[in-house]
Image (cartoon, rainbow, N blue to C red; front, side, top):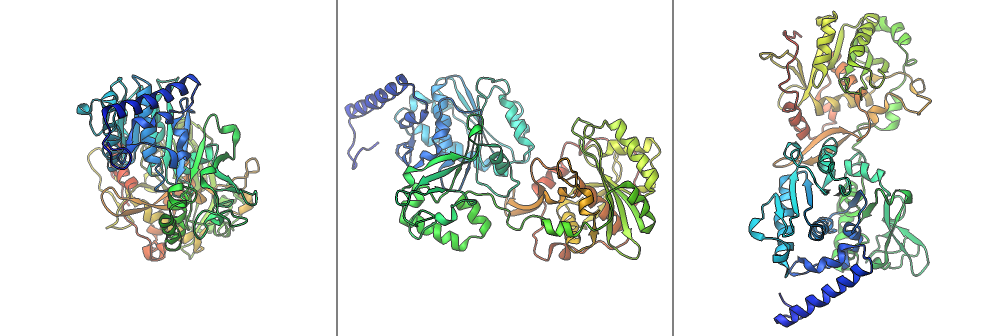
Length: 602
């Protein structure tokens, strides 16, 4: 260690410095201090004792008594991960015999945190022997001298490696924007046995508006960095919907009104929802107000260059720390309204127009399998005579939590009334069980088109899976490409829905076709190389009608030899590769479940 301009410290100097720091800390404890940040001198960063001077916007991570949930939506290169490691480490040091779980989507990310950030931060400081026994450290487990412990994990494709953990006092999920929403509650259950701690920290850099990070942000207090201009007295709120873009000046961060420089060291967080601050504080951090960017000329020039060269989505995500849907929505509001031109959304209307269809069918997406959260959704429609246009005449959602034994007879009654020649449904998940029950109640096997989503980048969009021992033959449907084809045909006017106003539920102002607005395309890094393009839904929203329509449209078009070409469906530009989600689907928990016996014949 060196102090000043390279002078080697004596033992007396080190002892004196330690006594001074320790004495200040003891005084803080006596006065009822609320932040572990004052212990940062025990850790080391880039060869120097850790200081939060330039990263004070993350001070809430060091709270001595944190909120049950805290989240940070931050731009790149703001030190959120480094600060998170320091805050977690100090908490383990002052709280003996406690456990933390640090989770990222990919192993390479958690490996970097453990070996490149945590190891030198704890191991190079003057108090390393008091903090931990370095000889016992592992990549995925770090032990402290006081009996505390850090567990590291990754959960992009599976959370099976984390299920055995329990008694976790602090959970920190970093880069949560790349995490599957369904995995988050499972990870959180590792702290269920810690009622007095069970603190959770979420952090990441935003992507789309439906991303898990954005969903958490919308639940939080949504506090943004705010500076009062010393020149004109105006308050500058650093979010895109307020003043953030106008605060990007030529040489530094400026007031949106008078364009004079702002003192970024005087910013404070102002929450949009103050009543949420105690339970779930949320913080937004951008590069624009960060001292390491706004106060260093070379860094600011780089920020301005990025503003010119990045796409809008990249600049919003990486620099501004804002979520952005960059034309990635599968369909816009007006295009969806334009497709809703048929009659009233009623079964009577569907039955009235039944004979106008050359090919009549039903599409079903089974959801929940009777587990108490079921929203099975059914479509009635088919191909108009002399046309390949799909007319969806009626859209029906079965009641929530309707038991499986009641769902199947209800569907069969509808089949009997509508008399479809195609019954297209989701065979994966619990679909095989619904089908088996239907067959046992005399559902005509010749009507059934059982689809299973997957990935087939080098094959047709839809093809027949070969039946295996104990399994029933089904139809493989490429998830990403088929959805691009469906949405392309909607925008081209070849898929029509019931009248827009007739669909409206006056109690909550929602419509069945809203499911189509919840779908967007997003790219993510691949498991090994490159990026994947895939279609997903907004967290917390339904997409069941969309999939029911996809099954029905695919069956109708495929049976008539009119399935749209892929270049037409993607406008010639989409990169449609197998996605991690689709790989999961092929190897998921239902891959080896028994199906109803007997071959399926197309």
